[in-house]
View (cartoon, rainbow, N blue to C red):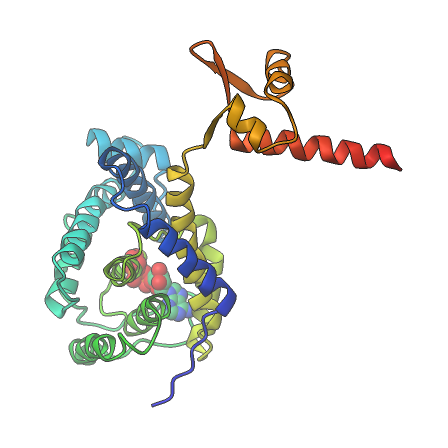
Length: 314
Ligand SMILES: Nc1ncnc2c1ncn2[C@@H]1O[C@H](COP(=O)(O)OP(=O)(O)OP(=O)(O)O)[C@@H](O)[C@H]1O
Ligand SMILES: [Mg+2]
């Protein structure tokens, strides 16, 4: 069957290039991964809960997760929601690294983790109708939910080769929230499953749909309801690119040059560079008693001088 692919080719190629660049840096230093992982987990928890209306700030979320404390002025359900999320993220991670597929059982368990101590129906499909605020469609009747969910899981398996991971994950997310299998927690679970699909395909931990992007997220879902997936798929693409950028930027240790190396890369002699360094004209620093600078700073200086020369010409 012919399927329409809607991911933007330019964005997609850029993402693939960044993904390869990140893969070439593997294995990533464990200390780096652990530090980043913890921070990303806190941010993800904050954003995913904020999208659903939790009033916890990023800092309060951090306190709840790191110190396990309760924020007096905030509802217990919101505090519990923040506590539950890291466990759900870890469940997704284990699933991905164990090469386990998304199944009905896994989805129900995820719901149980997310809504533990918050909703009495945690771990169970809804047994009544539901409406999605801001949506024009009505989700299917509750008695259809188990079969539709199973069909969606089958759809995912059948389409692994059909779509790029990003488009597959985005389409899965949309189909999932259209079924709306649960009375509560559908969005949070959809975003976690999106991550499971992307991480399974080598995307880094974690693709975060931010609260800042909430309006864009919801508008593109509305467009998807009308059959146009383009905005939503590309919204997910941009969110995926952002996490690749975070890793690449964090890993990008500046290239340090000796004066001799800097001289070879620029029109300047070692002596002149040394003078520039001593006078603070170029951002250099001393290693022992020798001047060094980053390649970026050198290139910035060269470009500035070039621009100045050109200005003086006219
Ligand atoms: N127009 C739409 N079309 C499809 N899905 C939508 C639409 N608007 C919102 N959604 C999805 O539904 C989720 C919110 O659903 P709802 O307001 O019913 O809360 P919920 O089911 O309890 O989700 P939660 O984690 O997500 O609290 C959003 O996060 C989004 O993923
Ligand atoms: Mg909700």
